Image (cartoon, rainbow, N blue to C red):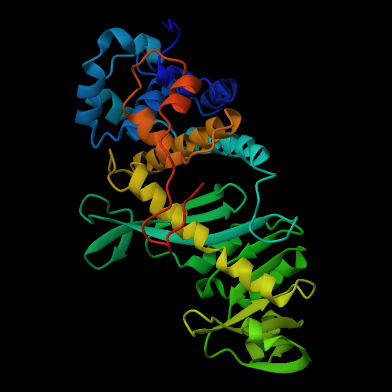
Length: 387
């Protein structure tokens, strides 16, 4: 019989705790704390993410049912609703933000050789946002509409492994295009975005940094054709052109040439117009890159279904950001375990297993391989599987 650690403790062993302790010291997270430390807070919140707890009362009741095992989970403090609520309210969310970033760096190295779906060696990012609706009376710091509050998760997703490399949490009023000002463009990388990010001055800044972008043109965009390249119309391509902007302010913002590709989807008969500053890739590859942007939509759907970010355990901005970043840390940690244990099944299957076995004393690798379900194709053929 296995006499080692609990499953939850084995999962947490994959986290870089030396980095966590350094961040707690950096932000004075445990200053004047007597019993319930930042580590206790993180472990309780991570436990809530893995086991689908819905409230502080739910967390307290679940952990309180196994008091003899809390020490073996790594929790040293007394778990109570008030202690956890105070920790979420007062402990600096930057601790969990930087800890999640450390996990993301580890995961990106592990998934660096993952197939991308297109013949491309460069890094490809998908940029998009999702909105989480809130109650305005409980979250007055996140205004969205006259009688509604919301937070937006602006996410830059590395498409090799579906690892979020950048997340900005804002109120619902912040327009998506403003997030481009917060990004540090990586030379040689591709950024795939929808039309909400079409701002020629900001795109030109990205171009000057040596990055490539792929986006869609708006219906009222005005161009002057400079060069046309031959295309194979049987593939759905209509034209592949070098163009320049003709509207004065747009041309001032982006004074150089752009590449415009018009493509008719043979399945939907919808005509799409792509814009990019890369003139070397085949036109169909540019279309395939834009199609891969759908992975960020799948990521949003996945984390909303399988992580606790639609119901928050606190109402302050600090509590919301702490919960979101701990959720991201748990997501990335499970992705790291999947890669290091060389498991073939999905993160969804892993989370389903981990959600019902945190107090079990069984080898993590043996449990995940013995209990792994047979992966079947989705009932909806248009639905993709994340990771």
